[in-house]
Image 1 (cartoon, rainbow, N blue to C red):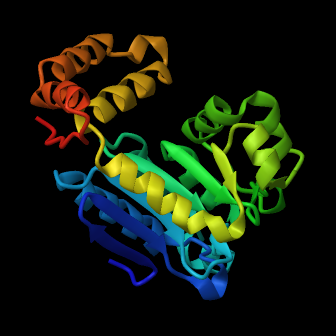
Image 2 (image 1 turned 45 degrees about the vertical axis):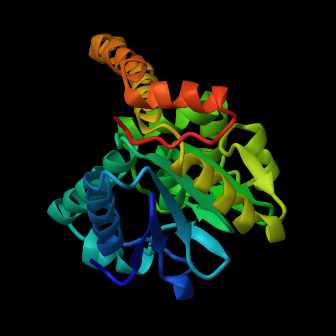
Length: 261
């Protein structure tokens, strides 16, 4: 694990922190690898129900790629393919996770930061945040999977504005375009994130898995949709002890205690 990716387990909450504040958390190969490894470890931990991503330093989530390392990490075709494959593997680990994933964006969210945010289930930001994908300034390419994820969330026109027009979206513009679900005043951001992450962590994990998988299935090409699995997860919820606990807790006017069974 690289020092540029910090992890913490706080009960049912897993935390992954981009930790290169001297470079606004600009992402490089070892960070992609570390992020993927961290997500894989959290995925194997049944106690973890939600994973929150954030950036160290209070100025950036991820302010793009560490371009200074490109000649070393992406200098030839083989190196470039290794870099791209490592990044996509990490993104897929987040995108297909059973855990609820939250991007807590405080400051710049550029390039690879946008890519990470878009594979998270939920994205919230502070008022000081801004978003951009300056691909045209560097000459990098995007694979179908990356662009499809962007279009699925912010739409065709906004994706072109960001990628071709080079537009930088303010926090409010990102909210209007559906890139984030809520914009918080800077001084209220961290407490609000902690509150919502805590609420998720005590929610019903089988319900979360059902919702996540079914919505993920909807986002796939029709020929690849496993709707039988969606139905199976739906039935698992209603046959679970957690469903009985939820109903009982409601009747008894108390908070439910879910076990994922």
